[in-house]
Length: 229
Image (cartoon, rainbow, N blue to C red; front, side, top):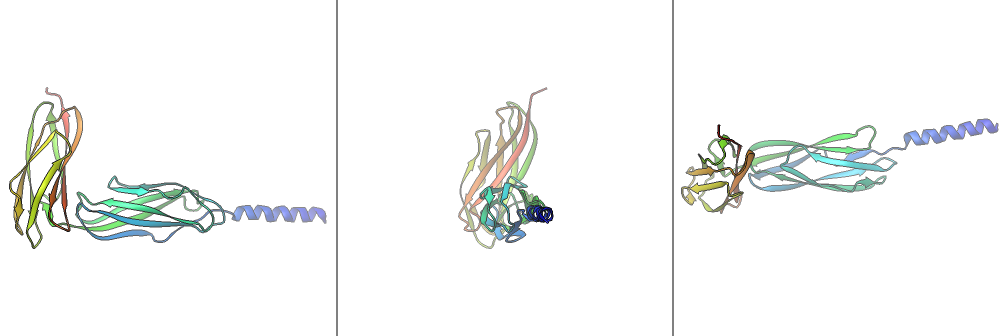
């Protein structure tokens, strides 16, 4: 009888261990940032809860793109404990429907990697006429200067004033045609690049406007600086 009781007790103990595990629960499968204007940074939240009966360990929360950053929650959640991961999306360079992904890695034995979708609808009042704020300039010989032109168009129904602009490095110089844009007007922009070192380079300039919806417009120019043959 004692032997049977010991076997029964051991069986209950093993079963208890097998059912003792962490379990991740999310408050929503996606983060919808709604309508935002290009250049704006928008915040969202992901609430994580441990609905299991053992400690949940959050190893990492990793966005799929550098445009998205995550403020990490606590690394350990006790049973029925919750915390929030704060997400920030930088819409510079984007237009239209945007979808990004955030991967959450935990010790949940059933779902060690869970993906949360981040979506946004990025609108513009000023757009690049080539529909992209990312410019590829190709190869530039070290010590040489490349001049490239692009343009910005006011696609809103009101006037927009260009207040100022800044560049990210001394390798990049920008000349703007004028300071006021009526609806449907186009602003010509001349970009001069003189790389200072060999290899891949990426510079950007930021235009500041008086638009409440789109106070900043960022254009990035990428290139490879090479030696002269």
